Image (cartoon, rainbow, N blue to C red; front, side):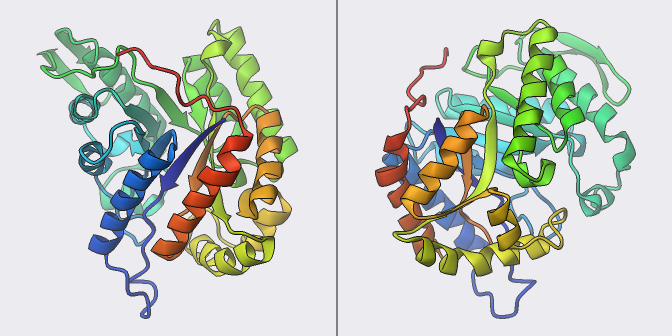
Length: 341
């Protein structure tokens, strides 16, 4: 089991008059948490891209990741996700190749097609063609990172004889595609990519999640891909305290605020996710028990979403330390595997 941090960068200064955390302060807090995660032995950190709302204030993850690369030495740096339809793929290929070089080969690349209508309208894009635009962009990135001169004649992107002067340090950058459905997971499997996702969006129980993962793996195998390459990171809201009661009392109001602003989380509350076993909120013993259930259905990487709903900085640090001390040792670590660079 791999353990990582995942930050959406939801910040509510425009949503709550009493909210005092400025964007500058929050960005620096997450950088400090990244340094601490590196020291505590977390496998990776992941940063989301969002635009035009308090739901996510990090618009350019590659810039943030370059800053994090200079402050850390071991932890892998991931984007979850880079929304391909919003960007020219050559820029994406250049930017993230540079992150991989500056981090000495620590890039994890998560890609998505986007799902928030206000972001598409903000960029004056029609979201109806996002899948086609995504596929065209992904094909460009795959070609660009080979380091050879190439041309591309796609539906959305066309150019002739271009070559990147800086390519990733890793021979193969670990890449995931985010999906919110069974059909999406199977499509990703046919492409030969790993899937990533948020369970409470895709299903209502761990048993339903198992069906999605099993179908994904079966489709992946039938498409001729090596199942040993499968790694499935799942994002769960996480807060660990000494007791169940303390953890719930602290986390509940912040998670409810997050869910209230979550574009596909309307009408959900903390109790809903708790009863569906889709949060990691409780004592170390509670969280270990829950994680073993996820491990048993094929999840080998948990992206712990701890910065949610304005949860105070010092509370996030306390939870991070308790997880590293009392939760992570209960699982066989896979984060020391060396990737080829």
